[in-house]
Image 1 (tube, rainbow, N blue to C red):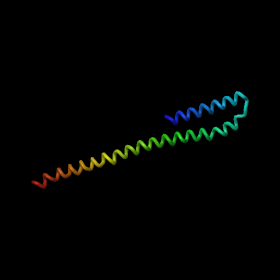
Image 2: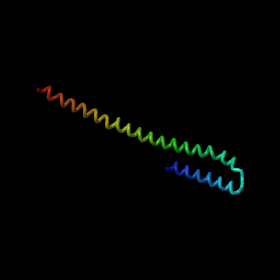
Image 3: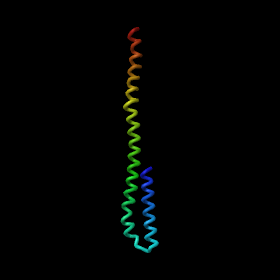
Image 4: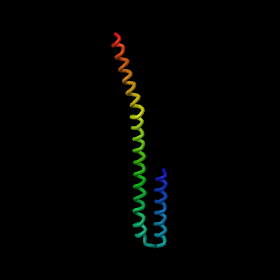
Length: 91
C-alpha cells in the first residue's frame, strides 16, 4: 500500500511539473529526461516489493507445513503403525 501511494505521488508530481512547464512554454525535454529514470525506479521498486511480499507468504506457508504439521503427521503415522503392529505381536 505504501508503495502504491508513493507511485501515485511521484506520478502526480511528474504530471504536474510537465503541465506547468508546458503552460509556461518551457522546454520539457530536460524534465522528461530527468524524471523518466525516477519513474522507472519507483515502479521497479514497487514490483520488487510486491514480489518479495508474495515470496514471504509462500515461505511462511512452507515453514508452517514443514515445522509443525509435518512433525505431527510423522508422529501420528509412527504411532498408528506401532498400534497396528502391537496387537499382532500379542496374538
